[in-house]
Each structure stands twice: as C-alpha cells, then as structure tokens.
Length: 260
Image (cartoon, rainbow, N blue to C red; front, side):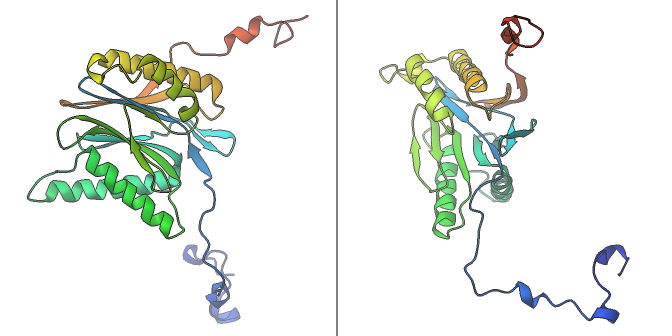
C-alpha cells in the first residue's frame, strides 16, 4: 500500500497499475437526493405595526435523533430582510452561501444594495422552481421577512416546488398545523396590522414556540428570533423558553422516583 498521506488506502501504481475510475461511469439515470438527512423544523412569522417578527428553534435533527442543538436557521440579508429556513440543513447552507454572494455583489455595485425582502422572495422562488424543474430540488421551505418596495411590511413563503404566497402570519413544517391557528386566533383577519404592536407579535411567537416544543418531537426550547423594522434587524440567536420542562411528570406516581 502507498502510505503517503495524499494517497492513504490506495494501491501503489507501480505495483497494481494506475487507478481506473471508468467503472464509476454509468449509462443509467442521474440520481439526486430523494430525501433530506439533517433537517430543521418550523419557522413562524407574523407582521406587526412597523415591521415583521420571525422565529425558529435551534435544533437540527438527524432523522428522529435530536443531533445538533445549536443550528441557527435565521439568516439576515444586509439590514433589510431575514430568511428563515425549514428543511434540509445542507441545502440551507448552500442557499446561505448563494445569498451571501449576492449581498456582496450588490454592495459592490455602483447602485448599492437595492434588493428588498420582496425581491429576495421572488429570487428564491425562481431558484426553487428551477431546481425542481431539473429534478434536483432544494429540500427547504423558507419564510422571507422584511419590507417591500413601498416600505410596507412583507412576509412571504417559498417551498421546494417553487410555490409562493404571502400573508400576515405564516409558518412552515408542523408550525403550519399548530402555530398558524394560534396566530389566527390572536390576530384575526378583521384586525388590521396597524393595531398589532411589536410586543404582541413577539409574545405570540414565543407562545407558538412553546406549543411546538411540547407537541413537535423535532423541536427544541432554544430558539432564535428576529425583529425587522425600518431601523434594521434585531436578531437574537441564543434565546431560551422560560422554564419550559417536563418537571411536572415527576409528581406522577409510577414515573421516575415515585412509587405507587
């Protein structure tokens, strides 16, 4: 064997001949990822008077294993928008690098950074749809929060199929089933955004994260939250839900140290 580090584990060419990779070539169909491996769960967003709030937990699950507990799934784009990622973490990292390169190019342009949240949402939707059309989708569902070209709060959704929509409150993953009903009850359609304060929006997101922590097996009590206003992006990435635990189970007879 050739024991030089650059060729560890490879047979020596002078003994066995040069490595021939031709056997790797195939005339069969090109295969892509058919299911994500490491995934993040819900992203929850809500508009309020003067901005948008976005939140997600910091867990990335390897299948059903809560493997990575410090994965930040909110990404700020300059000081104008925030993207929240649900779904595959490796695809999230790819999109993050893509957005970073766009941000750098925009900042170096003579016109400055002109992309707002609505532009960013449209761009990501085109990326998702293109990759889906190539049968090589990005396994993500994202929320884009910020402002549109008219300076109004914007919250939009885009998934791996390129399906897009916007609304006053949105969620991905299990949040679409558990968090959205809470937000609809707190902020019904007849209640205008101008009557929703920043504190109300943040409190509602925390309540949604609490419910998701207890009800979604792929969620965590550590979370990130971003508040986007005209003044910029206020992003906090190492927050903890207040005294949320399963301690009440210790008082149940037959559980843990309790005896019947």
